[in-house]
Amino acid sequence: MSRILIIEDEPDIQTVLRFNLEKDGHHVLVAANGNDGLHELRRSTIDLVLLDLMLPDRDGLEVCRVIRADPSLAGIPVIMLTAKGEESDVVIGLGLGADDYVAKPFRIKELMARIKVRLLRSREETGDAERRRLQFQGLVIDPVRHRVLIDDQVVQLTLTEFKLVHYLASHAGIAYERYGLLDRIGDGESIVTDRTIDVHIRNLRRKIEPYDHFIETVRGVGYRFSELGVREPG
Image (cartoon, rainbow, N blue to C red; front, side, top):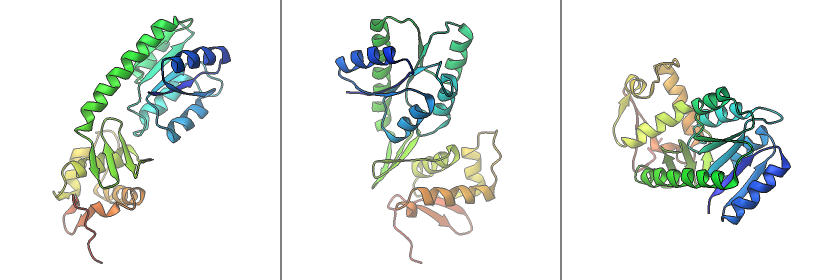
């Protein structure tokens, strides 16, 4: 059973979608506007989003942009529902990272088929990623969904923080100089210096407590991730 979030403000469409999805065995959550949809995404585990482009508070394109910019949400499949029928909206939406789109009025069988395809593809990617998931006690680093969990709770990290913890954990036991880390996580766009690396590490440690001791400071060098997570005395 998959958990599907419908972000749609029209009650009739909400009802039709909920009925057919639940009939297909899915667990369905509904949000009537973009802000509520984003709140639901951040507090629940969602497997797929059906996202209307025309919403009362912020449009679906902006919601999609927020989803793809958030490392903890970026891996969730998004299918856009558009009544505009304008090619420009579809192009923009797909450019923002939406996985598919269906124009209103839609045929429910076609939509259900597309949902099935996206869920199957997502499960295949997730199954693939299980071999790449990193787990150290209650700390889990998921590179596909771009998220970190502490004792099964999602931690809100910035993109830089996620890159840092993922790279260090992927090379546990190896000490890296600050500039070496810069070369490996830099995106060429944001300005990151050796001093800001220290700030990111400090913020990262605070967010991943009580497993902050996995990230060790190597004096005169930089940082490393301890596979055993042994807290150093003092």
